[in-house]
Picture 1 (cartoon, rainbow, N blue to C red):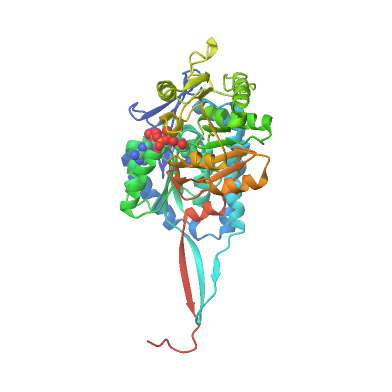
Picture 2: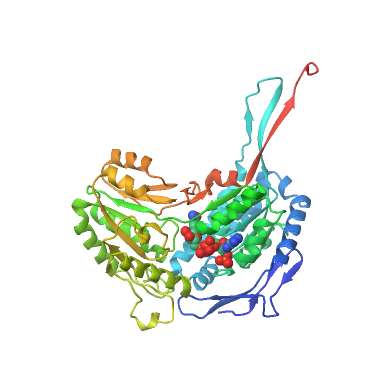
Length: 490
Ligand code: NDP
């Protein structure tokens, strides 16, 4: 791996981190080697970046371009991401430890976000409202100015693109703070945007720590909107600062999603769907189906089949095409996941499979954890209520529809839910009752750029993706244009 320190750019100035102090070292979770080094931003860089962004917002033509003109640059960014797909996916794999095929999907999806919002720009419509007097009235979407985007480590480049593409499409200048665990892809994205012709200062990446750079961005008087994806507790801190500052936020937070199997489900598809819903991305997915509810009549048979499917999962090195599950992102995160499994044991849970590290010697230097299924807990147990964000599934039986709706909604989270059933009327009834921003019926964890995404309850505020994603980064200006024949009277 290239261990040269990657620089980042604030306006004309490059920050190289050459003094050694201001460097983030990204560790490859698969083998503990150095995946890359990146110059580390400081709160002073935040001040400079905000000033540069405002200068670009005010003085570059970007926000005044017609949306279809902005689309040209967004298309070009998408095209260039795809040209570099393989190299970006390999870098992503080294930074995050995700299997290569997942990384390829994420890079492709990042390109898709730019292409989608380019197309949205091409078809942009402001509203003409029905006048109630002698005037012409419009509702126009206007940018906020400078927006800050703070992202987690689990889907680098895709998360950054999910925020930057609509924010730029809406005419804003964007500052991105990627996770310190996976800082390299955002730097590459900034380079690609510049090479695609995005004017300088409209997208700046600040690879720093949340506690200083992230916090400084959220508090900065020049930042007019914050879009955050990450844990619920961090989201609460950011939301309260934004509340004090009276600036809008988009918060995409954690989840503990119920995944429901009714007795009339297609059994084999449900087993495969449940396994993929929790063990894909090694469970490091905000929408992971981490609480399994199976109807009592089929519970023993279903759990037995699920354990067998889990046993067959190939845990391995991310660059092996046969690998189904790679490592967790860091040693600290693996320790946290292992501690939750210990807690589940103390709470009375029975570990049916997994619950430890792999035995294969070639995986000994990475942060691997075996896919784990636990039953015997009550839905009130901490392991059933708190987000573990790892390959750990808790399984619970249920009686009937009413019971599973009550148990499924008995959580502070509301990000996603899934169900398997052959009864379409039931699917509709239950889907409408579940407190979740996304509900999957006879499938799980499907998502695409045109469908809005976000959470109910403590899983977030606002919706990304689709047309909602553009609205998140716009504010509405109402315009009345007088057509009066006579002067206005009092
Ligand atoms: P964190 O909340 O710890 O961090 C997310 C980002 O916020 C990081 O860039 C972090 O910086 C930064 N940050 C931390 N503290 C502050 C602060 N006080 N002010 C500003 N920024 C701060 O989440 P993780 O990175 O651990 O990601 C995992 C979490 O993300 C899970 O809970 C998961 O559910 C959630 N998530 C939600 C998704 C959704 O769409 N709903 C999608 C993906 C993940 P630093 O670099 O220092 O960590």
